Length: 299
Image (cartoon, rainbow, N blue to C red; front, side):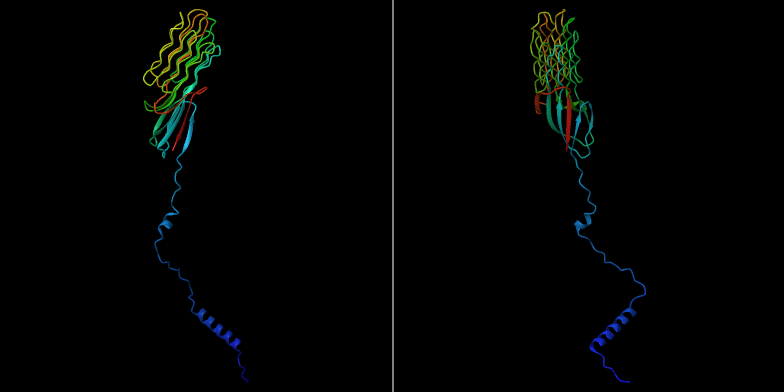
């Protein structure tokens, strides 16, 4: 047999095949589960998968009617923006005073329940009948004589209370008397005085006392009633056929006085506006038309 010399290339092939066969012969028949060394992850890696998103604690709710507000679990601050209601018009088209606005931020406790009160606009005077006082402390308009005009009712106050303690109150406007006799503007630390006609206007409530009833203008018309605490006074009632009733006082921290009734058909006085509270709040007189409202914003 003639020997054949292997080339370098063929020799390398035979050597590789021999090494591969030896490696395969040494492989285990069953793979063992690998054991991983236990270690401690960095702090940021341990926590990142389990950190909850922070709670979003901010919101706003508007109350167009009285109700209860429960402070959200994460809230500690509440901004109150309260608007008292406008006084009612007289039967002859006089305009009631606008309701006041009071703004204040207060500290609150999560979960506590606050009483929200929203005033309504005073009723319109009608022939021979005074307008009803708005909800939340307003005085009624004075009745007119037979065939003549009644005064508008006062506007109700709006506010927020913690139990029996007022946090914020916005005063309501006074009701109108006859012939363009406007009611006093609600709000401010002292409510506005109702306009004079033949009957004189009631004065506004203050931080310490209710307003006084209109008096001194009419020879025979009844005086307006003074406010009583937070309630506005009633407008004076006309005496005789051609006489007109006075406007009712607005509700507030202290209510406004009622307007005086007229004689000889020349118009009753406007009711005084109710005052707002506290003195340190941001106050705007006559800011609201129609019904009142309360806007709450928490954080």
